[in-house]
Structures are given as structure tokens and as C-alpha cells.
Image 1 (cartoon, rainbow, N blue to C red):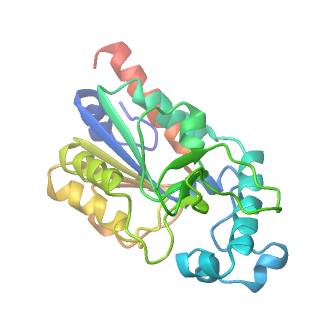
Image 2 (cartoon, rainbow, N blue to C red):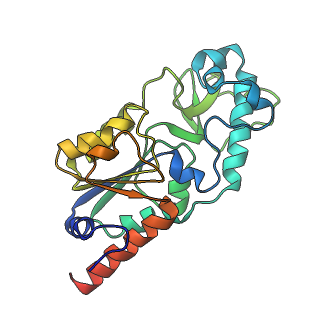
Image 3 (cartoon, one colour):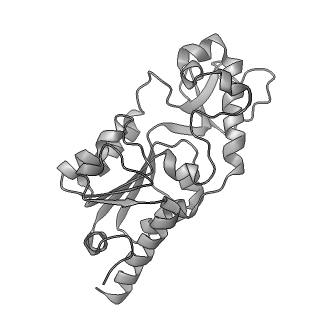
Length: 251
């Protein structure tokens, strides 16, 4: 029986899978209204992201960088997880071991209910001390005195900036799920930003069935087992529905 936009092969593999991973990129967040990194609003048009999202820029003008990130945080707080985020949270309940590996920093997967989220690029809602490394949650900065840690060090957004390495623990977890998953989904990612771009191909090399969900083709499209063109918010709920129905019917 046809399973909508997804193949019977995929539904069958998901049904028997012990471990599944989903790599997500900016595309799934864009469907919630999160602007792309290179926003076109207001005074930020005058800056390239490389001028703001790097450690040297932060040391030169921490107030400017903090202002930019507070602007981005305000936008993200106003948006909501979309049906694509919700479907991945539901998929977690249909698979014995499921993880979201995300390049996004907006925390929308967690807000949608996903419990196992591996954040490759950090989280814009967290802050980290540049001196002792302590992570500080729920900090509000109103543009007065710069925020500092109890140790006296300056706080920065806990995101990965240009020229910085990805968090070691998150990267290790991402590679673990990439190399041991039975099914690997890649959703809304351009497949050009490394090292995340190589994860789907590595998953395939290690034996996973790799499925790409995207509104357009990407550099990895010719290599995946299945490419489904469209919006995550429309397609992923159909995938979850098909898998749940298959499990109920025992097929």
C-alpha cells in the first residue's frame, strides 16, 4: 500500500529500526518564521554576520554583538515550533532510540517536545563565561552594563562562532548516532556547512537508509536513498502518521 510521499521501504525500515537520527538545518526553522542568518532587517543590514559572529569582534565591541544577539533572541521568542518540529517529537515516541542532530540554535525542537537534541552549534538562549566556561541560563540584558559571570569573566552567547570548533561532546554524540542509526533523516539543511554536511553520507557509508526532506535539491541529493521534495511541516506529519498506522496494523 502506498505511504503518501514516502516509500514503503522507508516505513518498513523505520518500523524495524532500533536507532534513528534526524539532522535538521535552517529550513525547518524558517517554516516557523525564524529569519535566516543573514537577515535583512534594520541597522543589521550594514553588517555581515562574519563581522558580528566571531570572538575577535566580540572582544572589540561586546555591546554591539550583545545587541545583535538580543535582537535575534527577541525574534525567536515570538515564533512557535511548526508541525515539522512536532512530528519529530512524535517520532521519538515511535522508535526505541531517536535523536535530533540540529544545526539550529533556536531551541524549537525542545519547545516542541523533543527530549534528545544534539546541538552542534549551541543554543542562542544560553550564555557562557569566556573566562571559566560556566554556562548561565535565562539571562536578560537590557543594554546597560555588560553581563558578567560570578568569577568576573564576560558572558557571551553560547553559540559557535566563525573560526570556532564545534562542542566536543555534541560532535561525538552526532557521530555516534550517524554511524549506528538504521535510518538517517536529513531535513531542511543546505548540505554545504561542514562538518554537518558530511553526516548523511557517513551514515550511508555505515549502512543507514538515508532520506532527504527538502524544498530543493542539495549537493547530497544524488547520493541519498530517498529524496522527498517539500516542506518539513507538511511532509513529516505524514511520515509519522504512516509509521503509526503501520505499527497499529502490524504490517
